[in-house]
Length: 203
Ligand code: IMP
Image (tube, rainbow, N blue to C red; front, side):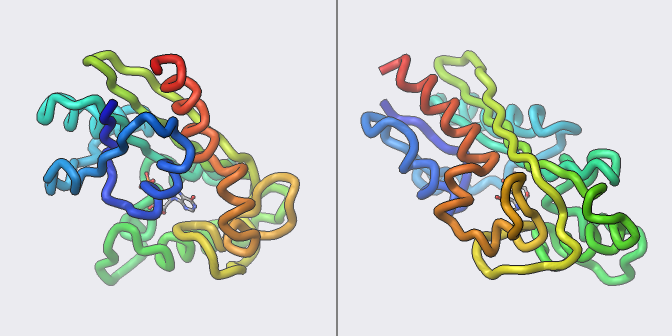
């Protein structure tokens, strides 16, 4: 069975391919010659994941799944949420133009906005939603990891907000804990595990 993962992020593709059943041939957007930057215009992670998986299944007539991840910080009323990738770029107090996916700008804005919030009130979670479309029918899977936003950045592994996110039960950031620990407890790993369980029922 061929299954497209609507991503061009090789890091994600490698992580996910280790977890899904071996009988499934995982294809990336590049493998199907899809070069479109699929617009993420939804107002929730669920909507954005569906937009991406529907785009591929409708246009390429292939079974497909897509993911969308957000960081939800309680002291910021759930922000950055669906705007996680471009939180720095959307900062109204920023005078320069900042691109999406600018990790330093994203983390900088979060740390500034939480500057006066003590550690015990910096609770947050990463949430991943996967939308799978098989034979035109959609199934969604969610993975969550609870934690806290640290007072400052630490560690050099991982990506995105990893240097400022400390998962529950640990005292270091994802970037300090490293990929092995992160990949065993992360939001994405938990969502992919549910996807993998579902795919096994189809085999
Ligand atoms: P995406 O939906 O997977 O592209 O994730 C959106 C944004 O969330 C990324 O641009 C990162 O800033 C952030 N993000 C997603 N997953 C992680 C993670 O595992 N660690 C840290 N940041 C992440």
